[in-house]
Length: 140
Image (cartoon, rainbow, N blue to C red; front, side, top):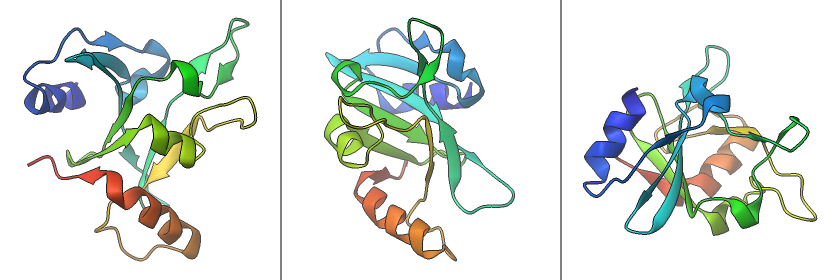
């Protein structure tokens, strides 16, 4: 899996990677580095919309898909784009962006990410891009 190779390049102290089979299409996994927990996904470019699409969800006790809970979510969500750059969202940012589920918010099971160099976006995507920009990282 391409994103796991990139993870190994980023983190020399990478500990055990646990695959998340429910998100295998997005190379879903969790891992720990020096006591910090991470969840990782590979976002994919789609032919009809700008940006990259990524799914992230888990199943509840009844087997129903749901957004991740804020209180049990890893410290960071890393979302790689197909060119290897990535977004590193800390849990606080995921809360602010409405990605993780809380007692009062449903959270999201998927989203689009827009690297800063992505152009020609509509108004909503441009707003989202601005909110995501602080978390964008070049891999090299």
